[in-house]
Amino acid sequence: MDNFTKLPSHPASLWRQPQSSGDFTPLNEDISADVTVIGAGITGITTAYLLAKEGLKVALLEAGEVIGGTTGFTTAKISSQHGLIYQELIKQHGKDKARLYYEANQEGISFIQDCINDLQIDCDFHTLPSFIYSTNKEMEQKVEDEANAYLQLGIDGGFAHKEDLSLPYSIKNGVMMRNQAQFHPVKYLNGLIQAFTKLGGQVFEHTRALDINNDPTAVKTDRGFEVKSKYIVVSTHYPFSDTKGLLFSRLHIERSYALAAKTDAGNIPDGMYLSADEPTRSIRWATGPDGEKLLLLGGEGHPTGQNDRDTSTHYENLVKFGSRYFDITDVPFHWSSQDIFSLDSLPYIGPIQTGTENVLVATAYAKWGMTNGTIAASILKDHILDKENPYKDLFHPARSEMEASSIKNFIKENTTVAKEMVKGKMKRKSRSLDELRHDEGGIVQLDGKKVGAYKDSEGTCHLVKPTCTHMGCDVEWNDAERSWDCPCHASRFSYKGDVLEGPATKPLKGVES
Picture 1 (cartoon, rainbow, N blue to C red):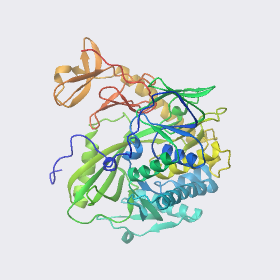
Picture 2: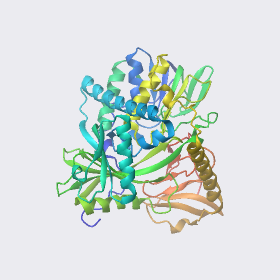
Picture 3: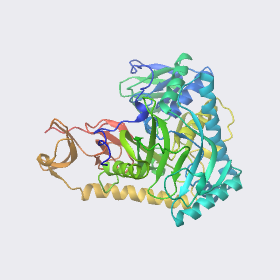
Picture 4: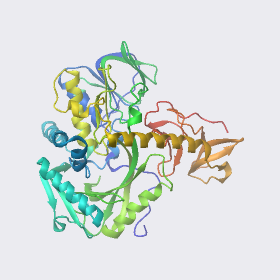
């Protein structure tokens, strides 16, 4: 990291530089609508737009700012190439369903491109090939197996030779998918949300949904007001109000990291790349706010709240990689994101539980929300309009997924949750409040009790009870993001205790010093 100035002290996403369009007010009265959509990311905004086009009255609720969640902190690849997934989908679900997954995501790419053209959205959209590559012997065979899966499924792509990949280091082999794309997600969704409001759609920011009543259907909010509607779409990335469906027990959550860098070498590669090896490296180029071409690097994933080292080292590792191979000179933007995985490699899209057909959910995109989130909107729209959709059964949350591999994943994930609950209560280390330096957080002893503390740059201490308000797990300090992260179900809270994301809807309790 010696070739340029240090990373900015606080993370900032490249995509969040042009903020979401319009300043939307909070909900300040009880209202009614045909559909309430909770969560204003790519799934929520696209769903709201599609329903408004059909003439329905739609209310879109967002706990923070529009496009302020995961969609604003992505690598923004619009691709059906989701890692080495197709060989696994064939093994788990068979060729027909694996092919259907590919077709769904290809339809997502086409939908985005059609919206850009129809609505004349300037969002740095570019059609590019996408590559997965190996750098070691072990992954070389897996990449070849993936290329064979493409051949079986009739995917537009296949085996790529080393010379096909314009990367500045040694490659064993690769697999390519043609006619994929990249874009600026916030600019794109700004265009969609403008179209939605022109159709009469209502948007309410800083309005957190707390609970759902089914009879009559009503969404309670933290502002004391509620929205009544026939249908509710929970597009909050991680479902809340899920105590009956227990969907959270079938999810695995990870954080990953990204940065956008300047480089003098001019060797930013064309195309989009993802390593098959660990640690994962995602590579693409992007356009900066001043029009300069930037190198976008991603990777370094780990389970949320379960990290044995300083989380800032993940950024440092990306910087070292970029400096070594791409001669980066400055890193004006760096950010992290939260990604959700299902038990069987397919998203959950549809009714949140059997018998509750009016409350719908979309989650577990496994890092690939641009296409999966878009096709989810189409599935949800068709469900509400009582229309057939070819992908309904493939992604249905109540599908039969408990094959041997899924059962193993279920047991592993919930055993990990149990271990984290015990570890947090039994093995938590702490120190005195005086030992905290400025801009540092951690667990401290205060009046004989363990307290979560963050001392800001001016020396003011912010104290919270370090117990997640979702299910009582102990939270862990995330130094890179200045947040409290739950290792059990991945709720995240600001250093003041405010909910950032996850299934929790209530803030951490404050502690008097």
